[in-house]
Image 1 (cartoon, rainbow, N blue to C red):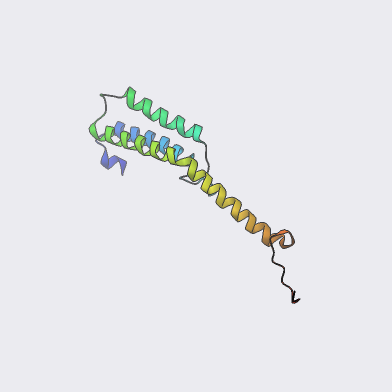
Image 2: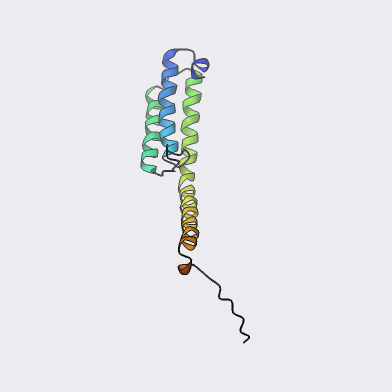
Length: 123
């Protein structure tokens, strides 16, 4: 796919490098799961990937084709947008995990879980 989009091999290799940085950033924002299906949040690593791509953009200014420039700018912009949203995504996932843990604990140890007391006695 990349080879068909870009005009030469070095452009394709540059795309592969950018894509590798993009995947790393996305994985560290919980947008991609690891091989075990877990989500990770490491915003320091994400910021490092975005900063590296921004440095690459700056250092290659004037040397990129319009396709390369458009692709690099798009990747950086999308990662920056997702970076801003990452903390709320992380909180939502943590809440979901905590809720499922509470449900699992209730079924595993029902005597410790919330319960309603039902009696036949009339008051």
